Image (cartoon, rainbow, N blue to C red; front, top):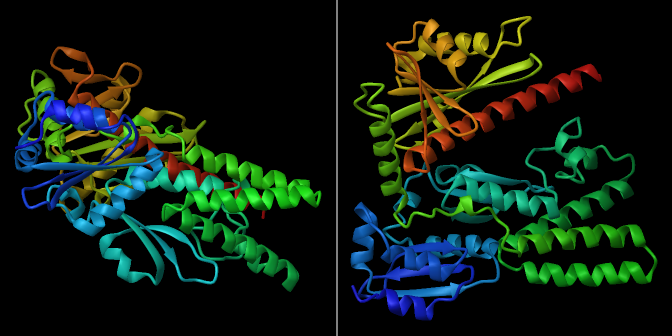
Length: 435
């Protein structure tokens, strides 16, 4: 290949942007984003590359880049360029289970939703953004934008949604439709549609235009002494300013220069090597992780998340409502969930390994359910694996490693999924107690 590390260090800026590796014909073969272009691209030429990453670098004969003002812009630009060029080494975007899109519906009060590629044709959409390389990227994008310009993800109903109470769906379409007068309805609908217009502009990379319009409105309101409205726009401008600053968590970007598939293989291989002294296990193709969530024993629920070849497969995610009464015991709840899971070996599939969030108690609970699949615990804090062997309980603190990255992702996803369902149950309980 023609690319040289020395040349890269000389030419690339230390700023956010998008880089494009090209083959000898000038065709893009891989497009990536970076919070620091120089460091990110240089990482491909320091250390060991594996599998498809190594082949990609071997085929690369040229490199171009586009410098942007923020990581947020880099995310949006990467999605646009990948969609346009379809580089062959951005292979994860060709799997319909992986790429995610943000879509805005054509409804009178449009919703902002996420879609898989196969779902795009099922909705009547006014605008589509993406594909985005990961679900965490999409969540971060929408969280940032929604704080500045609240939008709805539901159709109008008889009740105002819970997100309206925390300012993320404001004005809520349900509230708009229940307006007492036509004048109030028009005013609220106008405000909501303005939010959607601003969302479209920000996702199209035109945040600077939104900023200028808001600044003008704020000054106009201040001149006419409409200080409450001026203050509200000031808060929107501050949130919009946050979007343009490089504060997005570095966890969004893989520090390892290898492509995702190679990284996942490395993680699985490392985890298997670490647990082999404690468990004889041939494959880690399918790993399931379980977590329990409750508040002092109320509204208890549990989650099961499934990773296939190191990647989450949400078609195998499950929620379990806990039916045990008068208990706050996580271990009793875990035993109940594992017993129910085993009833579905045939229709849901059988994992190679089960990880439970917790230590000795959770492992003992799982094993007491006559579990026939290998199980280990993951204790919080220093990320320690817990095994139950013939010698008793044994602990394996995980150093910074590919294995640690994999089990952390599994545990965090199980926790997120459990908390999501728990919060839904709490919200339903709250509503029923106030009706």
